Image 1 (cartoon, rainbow, N blue to C red):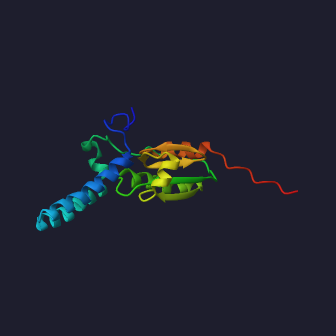
Image 2 (image 1 turned 180 degrees about the vertical axis):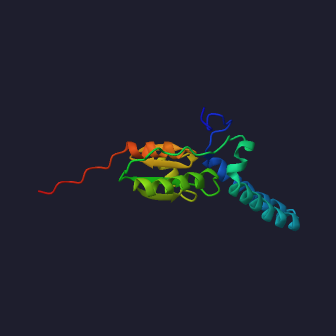
Length: 170
């Protein structure tokens, strides 16, 4: 059974949830400041980002306690070279995004593909156009893989897509 199958929650971040969490953070500061609780507003402004930083940087070890299960990797067996463009969509503060990005960068050295990184945090028009509701998203040749993906899954997706042949000039 895969580590993702044992998770209670999907191993991905809802874009709506990420946006609402940051809006709630801003609203909390504004409400505390408006009520005159300046010290509490300052503590809130320091404490919440600090806790998010701790979560973000320790997420692989904490994920199973948060209901996501383990985020262990499964290595790709002898990945083949694939001269394709791989597009990686991420969103600020998603803890799964750096995990998948690291796996893609490792595979890039073995498979020789072009990696295009796009942070969709401030790009709602792109989110809507691509239909992205959760991150991370890896796209190759119109096929998408959403959420935490192992190196094995990423290599399989990348290896499935063949590069377009170059036009022959007569």
